[in-house]
Length: 445
Image 1 (cartoon, rainbow, N blue to C red):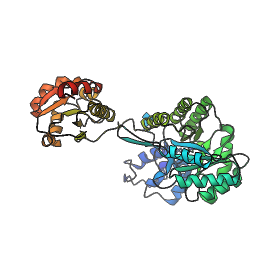
Image 2 (spheres, helix red, strand yellow; image 1 turned 90 degrees about the vertical axis):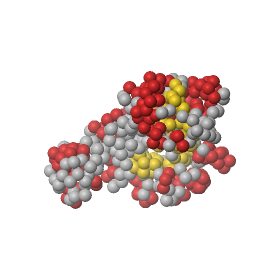
Image 3 (cartoon, one colour; image 1 turned 180 degrees about the horizontal axis):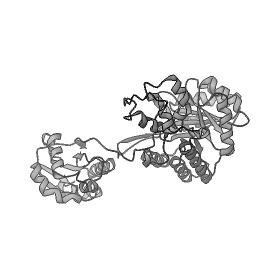
């Protein structure tokens, strides 16, 4: 049973040093009780206290790492149910199923498709995380496929087999890559746990439902292994959603340790669009990793964009650096556009400026990552602030004119901005989509 904050406080050194983050030991104890802090950050806690606190100070969902190096994937270690309560920390891992029955040419093509799933959007880089090798034949075929895949990609690996002999062969073939071994079941959990311990790899645990899963997890942890990823065994979207939600709530709210591990979900839809919709549900609530089949870029990109948005701190909007951006082969005669540093706003402007075919400068003013109208209404996009940025950023050294283009929605600032900056202010279009027509009419693009 979880300890209360006061019970934890009694075991702390009571130095109130603040080195752990919170200003007092009582505040730190409350954070521990809520699962929002780790006992390890206290430099003065005694070994006796560590032993006594034990599971009470552990995070509600254990952190599990799959893979090695810069391609390693971290799963779990979440502390809230809703992102607005704090934030989500470790984005859902995206894996792609590859069957060991593929021919060498088919396997090569599949891996090329997976390795190519990298995208740049609104200043952010998206990429996928894992390749899941699924056994369909004998142990030798599985081992050969694992060897080929391990040699052809740096992505983290998932070995999908319920045969301990094949699992041993596959683990040997990718030794040192720290793959996820999936799956331990009621019929094989002793052998699979031994293999996971032998190779020091995380172990996927699969049962028929969450009740049997709870019992199976307790059996495996009783064997001394706790590097686990959980699968309730459900495959219909609604049931998987219900299971994932119930497991997350039990881990966070009730501190129920058998469910205090990352989770895995598998898509079953045959049509790519349906599969992406199914994946979106699992990414949203609350799969730590999802295994897909579709590798078509135009289906995968929206899922990665959704994941990025979901795992962005809601209290810290995505922002770009406040500096002078050059679009195209700019010259001293190129126009200068003003906008804000909210990533979506900036890249909307940049895309339309690029589409106008008129090389231009863009200056995003720091508004704490808010859009033009929102920033203006909050007093963060004022004539004084814009003028201050223009005067400090060195734009006058880049151009031989003194004309700047202000977003149309804040045309009311034009007069005062001219007064504060000494530049002529041209009121541009309200929407970024109007920039190409504006540039054509004014600059003859």
